[in-house]
Length: 114
Image 1 (cartoon, helix red, strand yellow):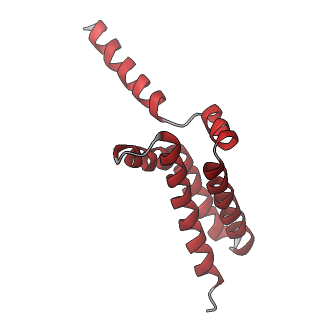
Image 2: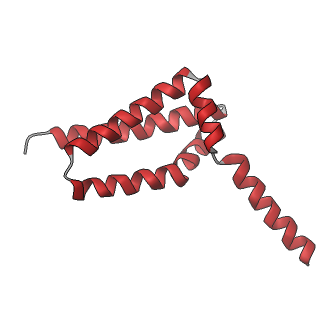
């Protein structure tokens, strides 16, 4: 029983680590993929623009959403794209572009006159 439990736990650890984007993988993608770097820059710009235009109390919600996206949402979105046939780098690039576009839409809504 102990061996079975150990094997199951190892499967979960390997599955999680095999899929989730580590810090070193993120840095490699930024260094080696122009498309990923551009998507990541777009995301950073949209995030920072929201930070500058939103009231601090409202931005806290965006900040929390961004943390959740980095911790799990990014990997979930990339996994969906991988299942659709994209490579790992393409999947993470698309997931990052999607998130950047989402924040950019929020920014545009923020800029609309009341």
